[in-house]
Length: 566
Image (tube, rainbow, N blue to C red):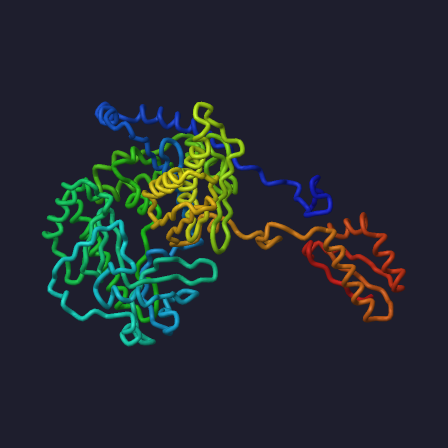
């Protein structure tokens, strides 16, 4: 590999001749204007009338790039990417998969079991995650989702004795076969986390085979819709011990669509049971649908104006799926036939480049700097070049923080960053401004599919965010660790390495009575030593009456060297 010496660091890290190009500039206003024009072209007269009364209506598109064996899906709102997913043939996401497992060992100190599920690593099963199976309740005080209104259906089994965590080891001893579902994929060296609170999500409902409790999404805010679903719940015939959760899409769904979706899930559960009974060893008995089906299930709602697909096979596949799930939405599927790649045509590629950049510019100037580490993610808000509003300069910092908060929420969703996130906003002295910033950021995370908890602003101007982590972040999935610096992002300076070589020669000279030494090192480091450090090595040779030779080996890491006699 050929190296060039950096102008800023003449004795530092070698730079490859071809530097990484900077992230593309995303012209937000141009994307928004283009989306506005597309909305006018594609809406009919009736839709124009409806949109006239919806002043806050935004134009939403799902763009599917499926010409290669792996697919990419982007959700655009007014031209700006709000969600991105991709799949590959090599990496299989286990989140949502159901396994027939076997209890390998119980850890009383951790209050957890380790389950063999037929994968490379055993799965982690906390005792709390065993209780839904033993008690028949999917929503307890430890795993209840606040976005769901829980409704208990009296099936005559509420009087049975409840199992506590202390009773779990006796109920599932080592060697017990158990059906579990992955709630968190393997991340790094940690194995997957699983639960017995199994759920099968459909387009309109979620089936809970081991829970008698039912629920309604709190995002269905109209009272008449909630009352309608409660009445429908009383009429549904469910197998004993099972429950359902009505998803947000149920608000405008017909009874026929809901019952058909439920029957599909019941058939899928029957298949799971058959595979489980036939399996002799731990194995997977159910996996989530492919990316296209998940997109239709989770993101294709009435608010989405159209779905653009550049693959005719995928186009026909989705239309066939929607014929069964939601026939009224088939008209939104559009086949893209232009010669320009679909992600380039709709400005997705520049947004993807920016999404993987460490620095993300803000519309009014300034930027946010995102740094992911193993333990947490830090985000710094920099407003140095933010355009101040001369009409009201007192609100400059507050408005800059609001703009940064909106972009923080968007980037966290796009990059699928989970765990602990620390955001360093520009400090604001007024308690009211701090409170409004906290409320604004909470609202920006409302539509996040993962559970998010936003804590109030601290005295240092920091906001702590806890976001549910189902799998590795998008950056971790698509980027590998640099094999040269091993993810450090830095290498030792050549001057420091020169001193290390001199110290090692000094140590070996003291232990011997002269002789010749050969230093095996990287060619770049040898060039630096010959150009800058010959006098120091000549002095060492004169002091100890030795001869030092340098042997270049391109296979030696630039930070490594070896001193041998002879």
